[in-house]
Length: 432
Ligand code: ZN
Image (cartoon, rainbow, N blue to C red; front, side, top):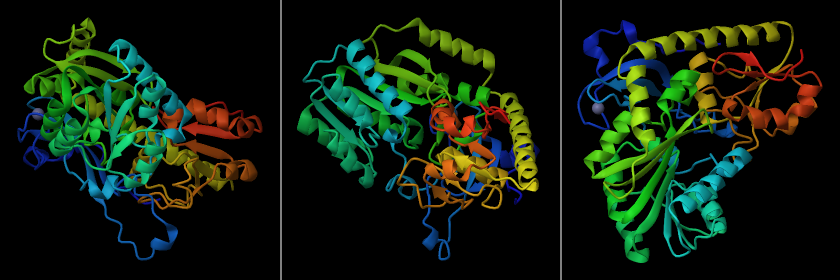
């Protein structure tokens, strides 16, 4: 194992060097203080082909978390060009049955709550392979448009019956959709909201496209869950923002919108779902004030909670590396299950490579045959686990641990060990 370059907590850096060069994405102030340093890593979804490895000059980028001391927004301090991450995207919503079910349920909820009619226009930003729009189709809406820069996923979304615009959502794209279809009754954005560095452009685009009484419904990883779960591996270059409600409310307010309801959801490692409308157009739920109040108590705008998380990250690293060493020293095999982007962060930051984990099984056929970015561990089909019967399977897609535990029930019943690294290293369901 190689030593990671990051020092986990940036507490030892002199104050003058702690303020990031880039300004806050929400308030624009040059007041973003580095609070966590995860070293230099490859973009977490850039799974590479083995034959390209020899010629590959794999780019590495610093991965550091910053806290805006003016508005409390948490974001990366350096950004990777979006074209390197999103133009050919290997993450597919439909690869997980949990996620597909979640998106279909979201479509039913939105359709019911906003009383959508057949002719209402629904636009999904970052539509991926069209799973959410498929949910809207099943819920009875006829007019659905998706926007996503990943050309390789557009065909899958079209097959599910949606018009797909292969582009980054922008004011021009918003106007184009409006000219063809009129204004949208609903704009949705699940998971891609944290990907957007230019929030001003996004808010302008939504303003141009959303109808007067329409709603923008977004889902994003919730910073409070990230901290509670110690889900540091969900920090990677695609996620430029780590949202709490407080800075989010400030952002929408500046553009004449307000958050009229908010929910916490268990999907992934804990999500925030925010319902946003133009000011005064929807009754505002008491959930909003309650969550803002909870965030004040947690002091997320102070450095202390991030320092505490860094201590927990160090413990996970020690426990996991000890476990792998013990199994390997006894002649046993360790493999991984699930090759999500978050696995890339964990493997890179802990310095885990193919000498430690022989391979990683993943159901996503687009990832099979490739290597994990940075750590270069081969990705194979899940069947391999049943034929090889390794001693330990490390569940890297730990947010789908229940689903994976079911898929590997035969392996576990045969005495195999499933290890989940987050929020602490622990066995699930194994008997050995
Ligand atoms: Zn700020």
